[in-house]
Length: 492
Image 1 (cartoon, rainbow, N blue to C red):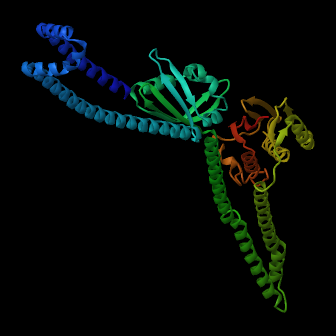
Image 2 (cartoon, rainbow, N blue to C red):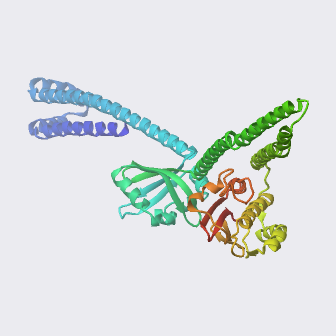
């Protein structure tokens, strides 16, 4: 405003100066008038000088003063033009001032809105549960880490601030061995986002599996949003394991139902059949005894019933009930495995094996069996359950020994990463390849009618126990050569 008034003052001053200069120039050129005035003033007595104004008036009343009127009129017109121009200029200046003020106000509002949006964006990023890292691509191709939120520090378990200003390869050395930095550079250039649902990363300070989504925020800048999914993967693995166990339980239940409908029904049929034979024999005896005199033929018939038919029927009934009792007991043993409380702890397998071998010393001496147990690595498990596992495997090796050579059983172990592996080998009769999986089924026996007694539950129990201990079991065998049972358990 002061500047505007200063400009107006200068313009008006120049105009007045021009007018005054013109007047003085005109007066300077009026020599007769000046001389007349000077002579008149000089020749007039002092007392008469009071009449000079009257003489001036009389003189100017006879002089042509049109030039003066033209000068005064021009000055008036010029003054009017200046005033009008000043008014118009004031209006233009005021209108421009209002426009500039409105523009300034719009820019102030836009700046405030931008600051509020940036503040909201910072709050969203800062409190976002996903990790966020910001990068900037420089002209020389260096991808610089510029920012990171609290969630990124929590997920990566590191402090982001010391890494700011470093290249992506310097901040996260493990990425230098991957194509991720190059992918990020392409995102900064062309803006095409990239995502992956499973990315494994590892360096000196950070290790984990992540889900990543990377996108461009502006030209030459990008953001990476990520989350750690190791827990999710472990949960999915646990779910898959549970589903697998559930499927195995269902298959086992189907097997039990089949056993209940087949193997348990078979002895019942025998019992019913031979019970009917006993009833028939009893009726025949009743008829024979009802006669007054027994002939020799009747006497022989009664003797045959008492000495042959009834004892035979009773023996079959006894065998059937014994088989049913054995099957029921086996089912109970199998059912108790899933409900037994386990105590998971580090197990000294050498001490466990020494305990088991003491229980089979009598069989070793009686059948001339050699058992070799080398140094075994420790594992994690339940002492009682693992005792039963290896006892069953050694018992099987003793029962299925080869009749034509001395039985030799070898027990060895080793570490395989985070797993402990054990092998129980024998030189017995072996297992045919088609039975390698069936021998772990409930009540499955290699030779049901053979001389070797058992219910076919030993290996089923072994597999059930190892399933609960996060272990595995499999067999490698060759008929008439021997078998090797391989057991895996969590290492200490």
